[in-house]
Image (cartoon, rainbow, N blue to C red; front, top):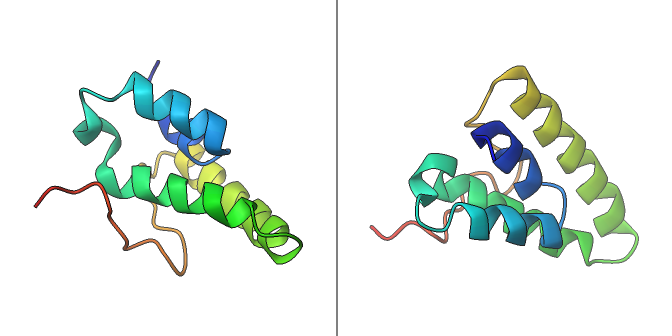
Amino acid sequence: MSKKTGLILLHIGFICWLIAFLNFKDKKEELGTRMITQGLILAIVWCIPCVGYVVGTIFTIMAIVNIAKGDEDYKLPIFGEVDWFNKQ
């Protein structure tokens, strides 16, 4: 799986996030720990009825469009700076 495909999968939903996370489990630095966290938070947002669906859809589209353009370090609004998987 390519890096760009992995980044897009991180932002689609929890099942896709899990697939990308497990595929890159030994080389998390390649995807970026902040991007992994962004994808997980986005999957959690999708679980909130009504508002979560709208916000999740908008943020998912924004992320996929920017990643497809080549911006592999894209930060989503509101929670783009959060990084749970960084071990520093």
